[in-house]
Length: 203
Length: 203
Image (cartoon, rainbow over all chains, first blue to last red; front, side, top):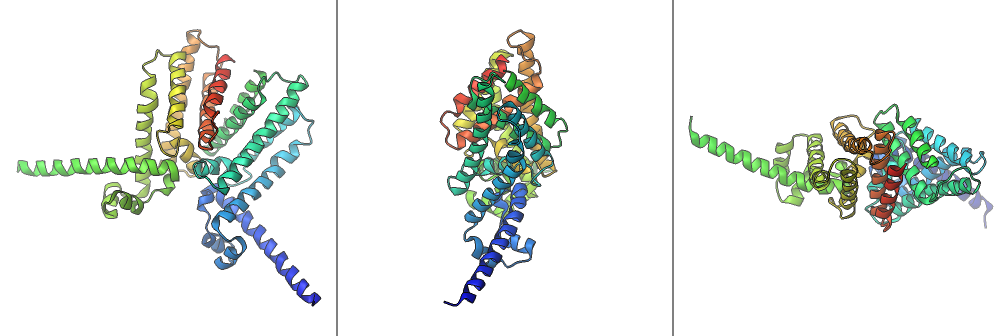
């Protein structure tokens, strides 16, 4: 055993992990605009000034890159939307914070092409496989989070929503449609979203 | 003037129009699955056993083909959803028929990839140009149709919807989300859509 071998190996692993992060970060932006189908090892290599073979070695097949990109998008979404909202008390306050953070996430936007799932789920929803499973699971987790806050709000008597899952489906649908409206330049889209969500919470 | 020249020319125009229709019909199916970006003159030529140059002569640039495909999808949608529903009296009856026809259009589905606009608008919404304009205009016409029936229903005292445009935005958003749920294999999606729309009409 030569301890220097470990140092060399650790250095390589570290550089590999850093390269992987850099590539995935760039790939998330590309995928939010051109879709996960728009990703290519060659295109990323040109963008980042690295070798195509190096990227292929790190990710293997394109599908693995796409799954890694979906996971990175989920983490960025959690940092931008879910974590800040969790500073609010559970129930209606956290739900409203989630909606406001989501509108900011789509309007600023966090990714250049707007909502990552709005751009990619409609393309992959007809294609069984790990990319579709990842995207669908992430969308379901978002709806479950909304439904959970609605149930807590209902339990606390803050709102009278008879079916939390149905209301969560509606709120998520409204936000996805708001993302499209924002991309199309509809200046009133954020206000429309707030009024639509208010309507559901009052129902 | 040789009348035979007109006959020859008319024959060519007729064959050209038929070829155009055949190509566009095939392209609508491809675009509902792979998206309008997934269309290529070469791919369509192979699928249909015709020459790539012939397709290029008929359509010119890919963008013109994409606009022609969007227009063909709109016509097919009108035949499948809008026209049958217009047999019902204006107001709540026609609105419910539009919703039921839309669910059938997405569930059967009319296009192999499900709703044409759900698949393509999220990809083109960040790209200014004639394809985006066509898709956005078609979506707006659908919302306007729903809003118009809601206003007629409200005027007739059939429902109490204070803001028809807002309710139309919500109904269209629910239907788009339902299309994704159907593609993902959610058997309860059609029932969820009906309950969500009922909730809006009761509000």
